[in-house]
Length: 237
Image (cartoon, rainbow, N blue to C red; front, side, top):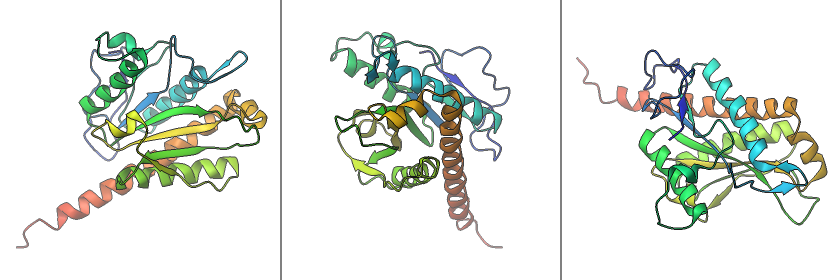
């Protein structure tokens, strides 16, 4: 399981001392608050346009996001840092390669028990006019919905769009995980303008910035709520 993790969370949330990303450990830290699920990889290119591969865009943004969170002292894990298929770590015979890939992503997140997992992807549609970001969350999962709203707000601001996040029960990583999870579709590879942006390192950095802000805001909100609830249980003297 090639997973790496990042530093100590500034607010003291489930952090581990001595964290380092220099050498990936066999298992990521159980103190990780965010799991970055970098979509596709290896034999699975995801959606494509000519020589442009979704898996490469996902990885570029994922690494930038991981670095940002680390610099902000947010404990995070990323499930791939190179171009390989997570199904390689799950050689079981239950289901085909694609199902084993998805199952491995969910297993990593379930073992780490973070506050949430976000899956990075790039969209595609036959309607080349459709553009912009879209965040998908698990239907009837309130914490995932709150995170999705924050992510969509930041990405809308970046793209100049006004899209609402979408609830779904159709995606494996949303329905099989035991933690709140969202899918972040960072734009449409099928749209010329989005495509030109998505392959640009500068815009990839802006995507990472927007996603990082939404994630840290969500963590702060959840921690404040947790602390508030805990304070109510303390006996008054």
